[in-house]
Image 1: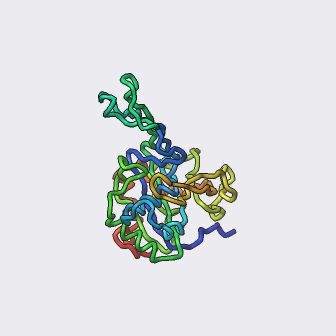
Image 2: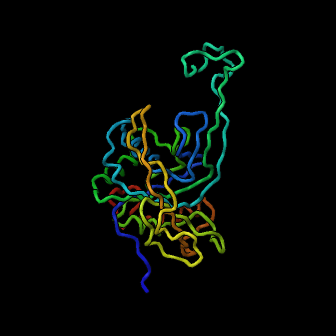
Length: 276
């Protein structure tokens, strides 16, 4: 029986890894800022907009045509950070209340929490039939107009974001080395997508087959104008996949980076129109 094959589509491979990253999913300008467990669609499109030098509220119709599939290389863990605003200042110098006034002497400090993903790593496949859109994004990622960050400005990526541009981006995604030990009996690698993952090789013990939506996430940007941001809900498909043992390179480090460079060569980051 022939093994399932991913649809052959042109696209980009992005590596999103950093000591800290944060992909807000529900909170909007509140003292409690959450993070999703994976890069959100709005966050990834925002990163591309930043690379292209687009202001919030500009038309991103071309970017919304991109399809997103995320491979969870390292899920990381959630880190909670306490933030304070206005501490040690006179009430007149602190943040304004919702009614426009100032806080009393004993209430001048505003407390809040920020959630981050620590030590996480993802590889995203962005596919689109319009190669001109992919070319623009690839060029911008190699020479971004503004500094790139993973969800929040305090979360810069640990290295180059663009890994590859390929005519078979999903096939490339499955073939990339993994920064982990061979799993043995550990869970399979997770993939998340905005469309069915019925092309994934299946294993009888895998809990997710990716053929039906596993949940819904509200991260499809509709209006990115400041103070008027709105998002639409999209279906999220989750699939499990067990890569062959030779793709595991051990923990993230020199061995992994060498294996990644060898795998991508010669169609590596530095050639926007590289083919597989």
